[in-house]
Image 1 (cartoon, one colour):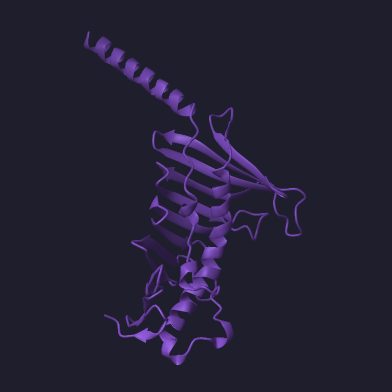
Image 2: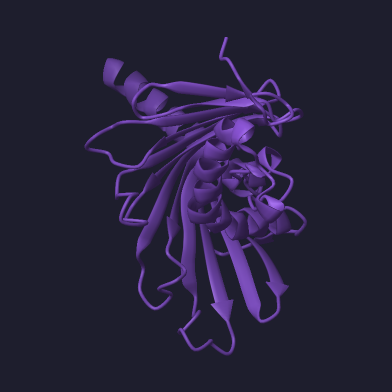
Length: 265
């Protein structure tokens, strides 16, 4: 009798699980925000990190140090994240197509590229994503024939992780960055980017960049050598650009909204 009751309960639970899976499969997963890949440091400088004509003075040397650090991160990391971030933004405008395997594809064309972002619901609040890029005809570097540019998982489209493959080597899959992210809003988000290969002689595989945007302030923490674990931390106000830099030695310098050196409080 007990065995029969247990079997009946298990069958009922199994039926409920199948119904739940069927319901989930009927809806497209919620797209992750483009901010999950956006390391926007443009508020640090209004001149594209190139101060015109050596405009900075000796009395602005603290800001100049910050400009070098943030400029390097902008070049080596932020600009690499921008294309897939924009691709996700473009996918947000598309109507998805349901596939036979219960996945959903958001596709769009930006000649000569076709970009497909495909998602699969794993549970009520999680999804798995793959972004594939195709170019016809391929360019001189072999880009790109159904190249897997981006892979990741999301939790309620509010947090998750990405793996970005190196589009500079489109004929072979080579990991470039791993990104862990959490986005509450456009003005409240954080990303941790880990290099999956040496980016330069100074920025080693395993090095990290932490980006936190909160309360109209950006905090950028850079660890370019995972063995030494020494960090450089730059903090600035998005509106006024006043901020500070703490070097690997722990020494801290500050500047005001006019970029002039000031004593740190």
